[in-house]
Amino acid sequence: MIDQKKIQEAAKLIIEAIGEDPEREGLQATPSRIGRMYEEIMAGYAQEPSDVLNTFFTVSDDSPVIEKDITFYSMCEHHMLPFFGKAHIAYIPDGKVVGISKLARCVEIYARRLQIQEHMTGQIADALMEALSPKGVLVVLEAEHTCMTMRGVKKPGSRTMTISAKGVFKDDQDLCDRFLKLMTSES
Image (cartoon, rainbow, N blue to C red):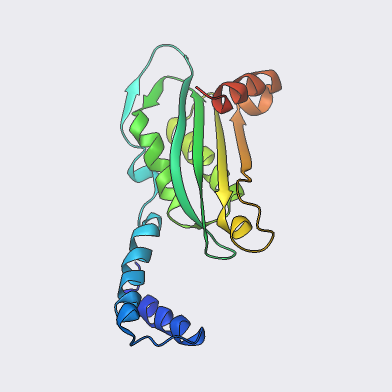
């Protein structure tokens, strides 16, 4: 559970440390706002993928499922700055599918934690493999990292792409390449 009081105390210390007055009119409520913000953007710690990947539908074929352009916002664990982008998910069912909104909810759970994009990509793929037992899962994340765009190297517009392939997508490079092309092409 998020400790609002500690976050507010830390925010007040940061305000003081940068040379500002936490009692100044514009800053008086800032620690409280920051506390509420962190409760919202770190809500993924209060959930597990199994909380949302729990409603299944039986299917008789193994037609692929692709969900593209799932918008996400996360916080980099190295600088606690945002990174944001799109998630693309493909899986080949083996007897069951999950409601498509559940894919976006799974992304959201992992995005609302301190993260690095590489871990988040694998976590989503692993959760889908565990919940669905599909023939394969392919997850692609494309994101812009504000730790690269507003500080450090300062290269706005650069995007990082990470890929996690499981099951048949890991075993069959041609299949993986075909789906990567479908998932990352503009619609």
